[in-house]
Length: 235
Image: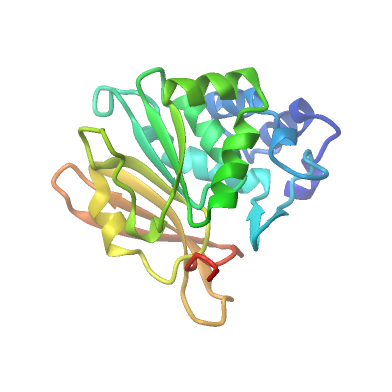
């Protein structure tokens, strides 16, 4: 149904995704409606398709972003268990999903996007600053962009907690990296594409759940095709 979701406007794209069952939760639909994909995709922004954004990176198709947010939603929304949600977006790229998740974490939550090279960090930050809402999130610290090796997770300077309620990984990892898993809160969930073999033909989405007692459960979902999570390019 993804190919039938493209439109000539942001509202048309999101409403089509909702109508076609690719977005199921109205809260997710409303968050996506608030963020104009044209600020993040360099061309044909309202097509339900991935696009290159430079530096060997892509912005994923909108239906993939929607699926990621719905998978992580119980850990992104403020709740009794997570009153101030902390979300890590590894491989934040264009910054689009970082912005969408910032719409959902509430006024006391935070989303940190981590990129492995400075130009991509600057791209996401600059894209978010194109809208009034995005600028407000950046100024308040509700959304932040950092440069680092996301495979090691991220410890945000000045924050009391080193744990993340939700971790989204936007590139295919060779494994569920131990440092990211260590930083996942209990309870918490990681959404990560894992390359099951070196051919890059075995990528699947995995949900990695950690319960309140710290027990980890890994669930393999559907096949995907993501760019690999790699080292930063050598200068």
